[in-house]
Length: 282
Ligand SMILES: [Zn+2]
Image: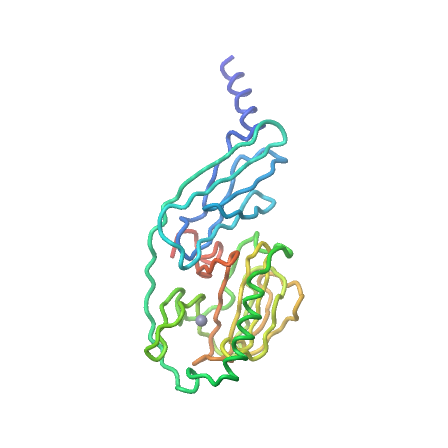
């Protein structure tokens, strides 16, 4: 008799979504993106969610990529998920996570004077190129290609870490919003995940030959200083497919790939993306 009630009770849980829970692939930290998985979701349910009041989209298998910008404030973040089952009442799941401060290292860079003190004409051109890149980072919608996770686009030595406070010829500059991977010129670069080519920038002043992929839902990856680009704007590229080759175009002191990723404008450490390194290992 007791087992019968237990069965009915668990059926009710399954039908109404009261057994649902929230699980993260790694702790939510400043400058990272992690998978949220909503567990025990009754089939046919609708999910919506917010992180600190900002809404985020779900994948078809009840996951969402949650992110905190590299300069996000430490302190608790509140995750809320609303689950609307096909039958029964809406379920609200709320969870607060502590977020520790993150300290970045300082990096001294010395470049020749003509590469730093830019002529007005060069400045104007660079501003246009920066605006073209920024426009792609605002993209939403688009075909989703990040559900199966991410991969490192090229193997090599990490010559520049994420978030470092750059001091250029003694002048503080913006923090490094990606990672630099040193590899021989011409080494193939692959797409970190499937996506649509959002931008092919030719010989940009700072980033050289520049490629931007749109993975849908505001998940965007950027590849800079490429020697060559192997894809066209608008083209769909599978994760792992060759998109170009390592170079030192633009303002670079040696052949390397600058790889950056934003999740709905949040600048995150690409190396810590799900699939690139085992979960929770910095
Ligand atoms: Zn870089």
